Image (cartoon, rainbow, N blue to C red; front, side, top):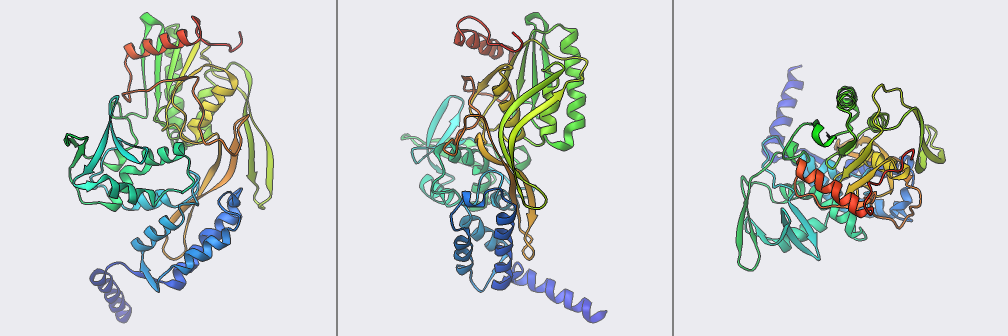
Length: 432
């Protein structure tokens, strides 16, 4: 017992003195082989990435040194597997999040990349960035592009920026408690307040997952739904029941649902919301889907939601859905349902996930380094989409929102634009 205890102390001492635990090339090879074996067995189309995925695996293994610590291995593998990424598959998110602690000071996601330039977005202005805290934009972009696929479309690459820029900057240039951005020819200095990781993907105004406001004078209701996470289904059901009861009692004629900051979760949440805007038996053609069963056999079929709304308070009026490039996964499924059913008008920008995409991700852990990764188990395509489609669900009416939360004035502006866009009448052909 004493000998074992002493060995543990020596082991911990070695880690503290010499850094992280080192993994041998054999252990890291086993991890890489596990990653690729999982993708080949579980992914619905592993050759979406390459005609010879085994060659990619062997190439990554051949580049391994004799040993690496976990941080170095994570960084190496994240860069080497940038082609194994379809939003629902890969290790990128696990790597970046592992570099963030509760005390991390992150730069806000106020940036876009356009024409190989880094731009700072402030309201409706886009300012070219010269440097951030003295780090040149060229170096920042060089580091950033290492994490992206060479053949990634501009749309997908932009979404990658929006999702990972803050985390990438922290991983590559960590240690800042404040951020000064030098912009333009006149070297204008703009200070950005740091944010926490937990705040990166939440609205800057209302931080509630669910919120609502009602304007009886204008017969208008506005619901904010920022998550479809499965563990929030009960909370969502309570919110929807209360909201639609009030909408009914106020005899609201126009409803705006805002899912611009909804990164998805479970389709059960999307279905719960659909039941409040469709009466009785209803069917929605979502598109084509392909999944693997428990034996690894591929199942093909059309993805149709056959449901029966049993809700007491169902909204039958004019319906607007607000979405953005942050709308993803199950939230995109909801947008797709509205799009294919013509239940209402979609306003905003294309969704984050492409309409020809992979889904149903499962999480895995490598046996030695314990590094996490995800692998898509399914595939879907909206009606009319094909492998060349890199865009998300396209809105009926493009609109650039300057703020996360909108006020009554902007709501009325959107409704006015919708009426003008559809030549004087509000687009609404559900049961007309």
